[in-house]
Length: 326
Image (tube, rainbow, N blue to C red; front, side):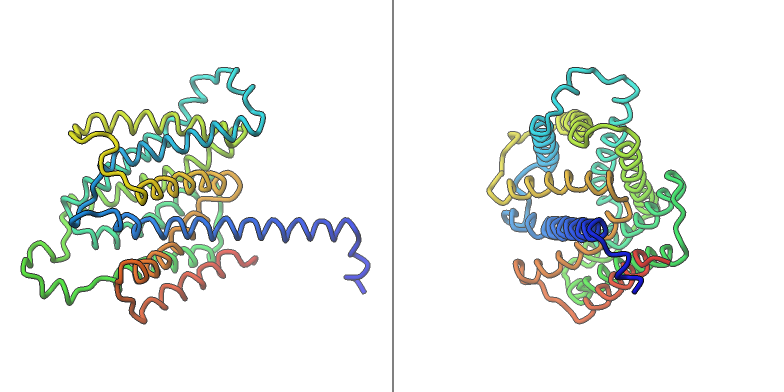
């Protein structure tokens, strides 16, 4: 009887809007997971004789250029061109420069760390950025997480460890001719760098979320500011790297697909940070590991093991604990 009395035209319209909103966010989440998960398999498809034929720094610059162009286009479509006629203050611009610097620093750290650890160790330890993001999210944004939510993030990090660990083909490594090159290893300097990487990764996500939510500007204009700095900083970094190749050397259709996908994902992530939170980003990244494994099996012929079900269960339980109301 109470339900019948409370249901009216206004309540029905509100319920429809809520269902539409949940459906929209669900589609957005699935799309981001698919793009994130397909990144590594697509990069593998671009390899020629086991090597990537293009320079990674030029690819990063092209991704930033794509995001800048799309942001400018959506700003024109949304009628926000008049905002460009009002020059922003130096303080406002500096807020958008910080994330670009942090992300550029992280991109360089990923390359630098490879000299101090093997790729598998990096994959395992990089899951620590879940903890760093959660801590910075709570401290810098003043968001108090319930004990169940902290437990959920712990499960999410455990899922990352399990997925990476059980995907290591240790038997092949032991049979390799060059034992020193294939053995799992990490130096003290490498451990320090991976901790810095995880801290900077979390700080970049939290700071970007803070800036996007604090400034009452159209998201397309905010993205425009972000990617102007992104193009500039990464362009300078690419120039200083001393690459002797031509800028677009080695580009193929698959490379352009990677660039388009990463540009789209960056723009979608800004929507998440503006209207949701960086924690949602962590769930996207964790779920993308499973898509990555499936696509690697389908496209690259890599072998899956029954242990893949363990991270699936852990991620599902983490999502239930985090998003279920108290």
